Amino acid sequence: MPTDYDKLSPGERQVTLSECRQHIREVPVSRAIRSVIVHHTWRPAASDYRGLSTVRAVRRYHMKTRGWSDNGYHIMVGPSGDIFLCRPLSRPGAHCRGQNQHSIGLSYIANFDSEDPTDYPGTAIGQQVVAALLQRFWLTPEDVHFHREYANKTCPGKNLHLDEYRYQVELLMSEHTDDIKVVLLPGSQVIACRPRLEDGTTRVDLRPLAAALDCEVYDHLADQGKVYLRRRARTMEDLQNLAT
Ligand SMILES: [Zn+2]
Image 1 (tube, rainbow, N blue to C red):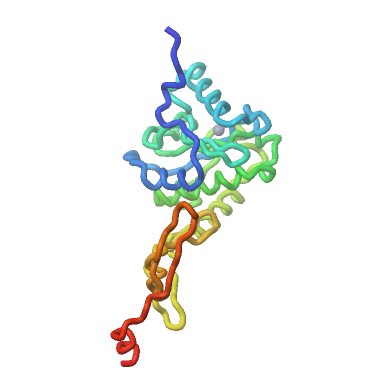
Image 2: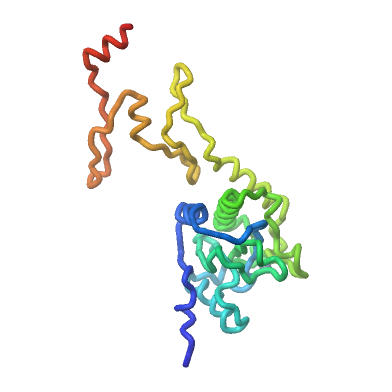
């Protein structure tokens, strides 16, 4: 009986960065995670990348040739920034001998021995994913490691530098804290509207923000892609309260 390898990977799928962040925040993981280990595939190189089929080819190689139960990596990132969830985070990976039990393995689809990481948007997207992993598991940039620290290899490539990589991840982590406050001036009223930074944009819940600005959400016409706010009508009672 031939084995249908494509049915054997329950977690494999492509996600957006915000879906990936949500997955990382919410997925149950009971093993202790102490590090994130970064790799490159070396072969396929970035120039060989063909989307999900490339990820599947890596997984089939890991399963058929190496005899592993799934893709060795937990997450793969394509050169254009495509993100693929591979082996479930709840299970130890097969990506770094002696370090799999308490780590997560992320691999760039690239050959950073010869290809330049700064040529590919995927490099920074991978750092965003690493930052989200560190935040989920209460780790610091010092807990990011390169495969070559543990093996006689160049992985994740001679053109990636660990100190610089950690520094970039640290910048992303500080940008991505949930510790933002929206303050209404004059004064110092903090509006409880769940501000958070996503992909460089500050997002808030509209209703509490509108209420603090003395507006209400009047109508939400999803088909027109419009939300209408209107200033709240002042009642006699409001005016009396203002006067006192
Ligand atoms: Zn590696």
